[in-house]
Length: 429
Image (tube, rainbow, N blue to C red):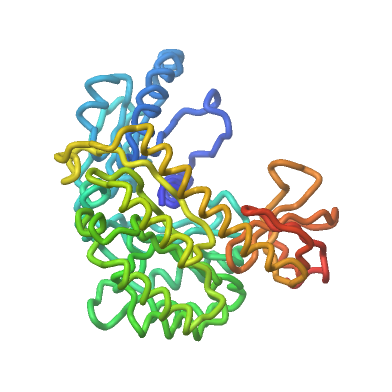
């Protein structure tokens, strides 16, 4: 989500005649886009801002800006602790950054804009994206869910969906500019309603995007288990472009902890949702988020999570140790799970997921799949890295590949995290 917001800000600067630079030393304007989900992320931001004091002093007309969730939550503290920051813009005020930066360079400012209620209104430049063949598209902002541990509703505001016609236009423009894979974004993306509650839902949007010629792959994150319904699942099953990967956090395998978290569902409900999706789309892979060490979590709760992880067979899991966040309901609870216990539970859950992923990936040896090439492998620049329709990483050795190609490959070996494959056919696209 921050990547998309950064791209939108860049579009605004380009319309004012600014040019992008890859070096902070060459920049007249430097913007830090921040996150508040974890305490560690905020500490890093303050450290980075402090280190930029000399950058600002070298050329006083430079503009240092902070945007995003931390800017929304800590606007006053940022300006008080770091007076060399010229501009603080909240999660729904970032479209104002380019014009305000121009005014600051003209001698006005500093500015703090953290309204947090307005709907961000900015026209995207399709060319402003880090990957030529892939793009994120934000279809809604904010969240109405009352999860006790999460600060997102506080800093991102109430859920607001973009009009469907606006989203389709943006996807079409991106595809015309060379994009083959689009990922739709929302804090609870399957709660999308196009601003017309009851008449539009995520399934409606999926069907509309089927008409976009040249769009080869479509996915969406992040989903809440409570927001799926038969109509959305039916549209997913009908789609010829939808990836076979669905990110749907469970957070805990214990009903007692899920109730304490105010997640709004039970393990049984989550299990039935997964079953309905897999019945409609048998090869759909499910990715998951977990929180270990939530206040009051005992060994029986943790054991339940281990059991559910193995039983459902997630293709991947992102596992987080609980840490209290200010201005959340859970912050009022005693953080009573010791840090060493959190670490152990994290590692045990990770071990289960690794075993499940390794066993599932080994079953794919000898099968063929389509792979969207994303670029050179980070670990071996002589190899190419891509992803299959289930969002699994695939490594190929063929030297004649290029980013953006979709090729047919045969899996020859596998680990828990990676598939290794040989090219079967030349360019599919």
